[in-house]
Length: 213
Image (cartoon, one colour):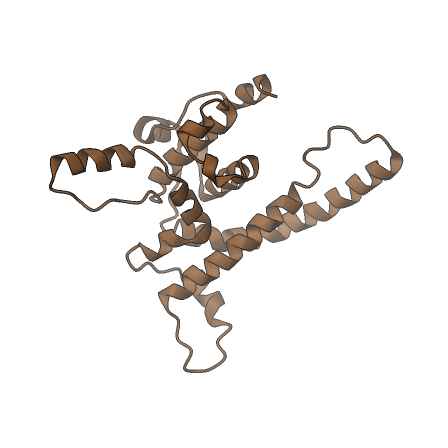
């Protein structure tokens, strides 16, 4: 059974963002008539819980407040997905060490008085993620091409695919940095655990995609 890693998590979020560019649609209600996107959204919700990216609410003493908060906990919000891409999850964590990222950041010290602060991780991640999102659109530049009707078109596709293969190898360096910040504990999950403990949808997404093509 598949083991889900930080690479899968990032890949699924970038895929969902590309498929659903309007962030106002990042909710169950808006996606209920689009099964492929809805299943992806629900999978992301499960992965957020598993990889400890789901915002935890402060405890409430009032019963009705608790009930309301529990209801919210069972839904994934647009703000949480936006927060993933912007790095706001970093600012609400307890102090966490990111040794590889810190080492890269400190290489750019201009003065001896420059001292590493935890907010540097936030700024570092935020800029890298913006870059990663832009690169993803380049890597998928030819993804919508089903058939090339001319020699010139086929040649252009071949050349851009060749360049993208090289870029894909290089972008792995950025991904490794992002992985450390997203998942400092290096958690991984078997799909059976995700299904049993985190409500991961068991739907055959490949089949759903084919039915809705």
